[in-house]
Length: 236
Image (cartoon, rainbow, N blue to C red; front, side, top):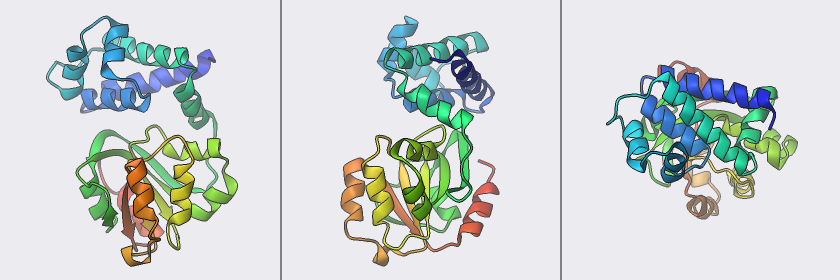
């Protein structure tokens, strides 16, 4: 694994955890982003799983910079031993710019945002899936250009720093194409928003695809520019 990539990732992760208003939740986000169970991380750090749980829930005092550094190093080391799948994913985000014709906007949150609050901002209505969950970011995507221009590996870049996010696909006709594209890629978002249509226009296959991948699907007819300006205006 390139040391430069590892170093930059470590700095970003440690900085976000340390500076966050909710360090435990930021730590949990990164652990989950690397798909590492609490028990596996605890074993690497030679502590009980309850210690990690207490940090993430805020029951234990926020870890200092030295402990955060050890936790980040453990997460990265575990991923390297498993082939570096997630480090490679994040490396593409570090070293590649997004085509403006594909990605209209992308943002990550240091602390979780309730999906219901997010939906209210963009005037989105639920189609299927639970709303009692949280997200850590969003990406606004031109659905047609993403499908036509991005390979399966490049498609994964739209997830930013966490898959626990909302993917907003713009100018869709039925929503079938983006949901099928998600179906055949390894990473799944927490939620998909279909922009430009209402629930009555959604392809009947969508709820079935969403249920298989445990994705909540919403619809909004708010225009793209208003969606972006509204989300950027929120101090989450």
